[in-house]
Image (cartoon, rainbow, N blue to C red; front, side):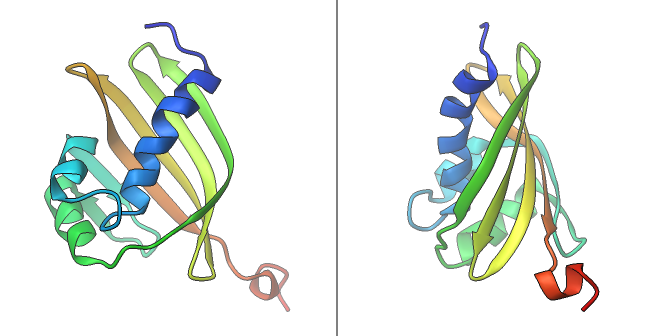
Length: 126
């Protein structure tokens, strides 16, 4: 598999969007298929999630729609890619990074980190 960054965005961004819009587009089976067994997340609040905890969290929260921008992808190896982007949901902006791995014929998220972007007044010290 010889994929460039554009090809990988076309493959991985729809998968990422499924996880962002859980409830609406992605049920428990969908979530479980997208998260690797060794999944970890460093949440914006500082909480560290494992796969089971994240599945439980995602199936319980209401569906949300994220506005996504500045999507970039860095191929790391033939079976690994780093997807990073900016998102806004409910007025909260964050920077997000996801490590995707290709195992057993499918892409799965192995790691995710969300970092909140402070409101402009906080960012400038006002």
